[in-house]
Image 1 (cartoon, protein in one colour):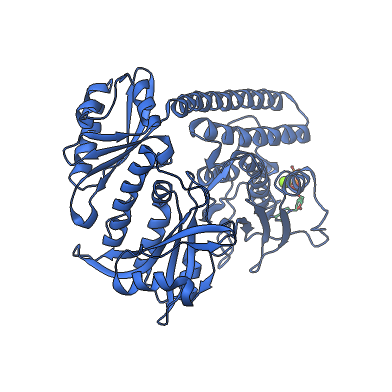
Image 2 (cartoon, protein in one colour):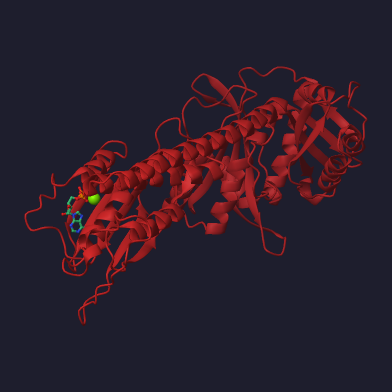
Length: 530
Ligand SMILES: Nc1ncnc2c1ncn2[C@@H]1O[C@H](COP(=O)(O)OP(=O)(O)OP(=O)(O)O)[C@@H](O)[C@H]1O
Ligand SMILES: [Mg+2]
């Protein structure tokens, strides 16, 4: 399905700022739809002869829809949209006219011009029209609640035409805003409650206010109810700001173990502050769940910490055993196992410090890479370099990938730059007791490239592309890049094609040496997050 932006860019001449404004309307207009008991359609003019394109639609959660079918993407001209044309051309809300019929649904049409404020705060030109279409089939004598909703809706509709609704967004507001059905309070210009919906009344009762809200000064009430005086003052200031015509950020009030989220909106049709709309939602349960999640996070971190400790113990045991055995091959094998276990421990160490099940992988790669140069069975100095970034990886990808990289890096150092056979008696490897290794730095031939391994990573279209390239002596001539290798490459292939569901290719580098190319999909498995 095309997005609002796609549609507007394809069919209209709207400027990016106009489209942003339309996005903000579509982000906040459920409120107006619910208060109006009406469908809202956002129409943009596609040409001068009165043809309009529907770029967004919202249905009321408080009343039946007037449209069973999706209207987005429809391009309509002629009598059906004549009212939109009037609102657009004359810049006023259009609401005269007889009911129209959609199949067997009678509907009332209204049209609200959408203006954008200029940088100087003046009302600018009309860029779009909101169609407000009410399904009349269930209309009856409106209740108190309905009358209050409709009056407030008309104020907000006027503010759309003025360019003062929706109010600017506050960054970082993640909890979804309270909706009309959660609880609605209307204040007059003096801050006194003129109407409170039954759900709003219940939400305040949970905070400890049992009597009727109508007539209360809401700012004073908030200050009195909040358990924390600072929070109370803050909540009161929010109400006062809305009464002055500002749009304060959402606030939470805690009292008696209950939590209420509030959103205060100024009401200022035609620029005149006439009061405020306060939406409230009891979020006690949400906050309780949040707290439970925080303890769950801490537990997971603790588990990672312990896994890391256990892995380090295993590594220490293997290291101890490596020192005891006399057979050089067995010792090398054990030492390799130590490195493999230690590299997994590194991931768990990082996970034990992060707050979610994902790790910033670059730091891990850098540590594994420097460990590979230090411990590899070679005495030459090999430079390590990382190009690009792995970014944040889910834990399950990270644990497998670190093993793979560990093997590839060790191979690059060990096999790309093997010690010269005649160099020294200790050249067989660092396998003597600790301290007995005499580093022998081979003298590079004149003009020979500096030994180097480059790890590069970049993300593209939800795929992680990794290459480990060395400028060493290259693969043996008879090497079978598809199947050849010992335990190291077996581990690599098993993890890449298994756990990581990716691909690996081992090939000669473009400028000599060897390059391992890895592609790993980063599409998340179901249930692993949003
Ligand atoms: N970067 C490289 N440069 C040159 N040769 C390589 C490179 N990577 C792998 N090879 C060749 O591939 C072989 C198989 O590698 P593999 O990692 O499977 O085993 P290994 O390193 O010999 O032993 P281990 O099982 O301990 O890792 C190596 O012995 C080496 O000949
Ligand atoms: Mg190897």
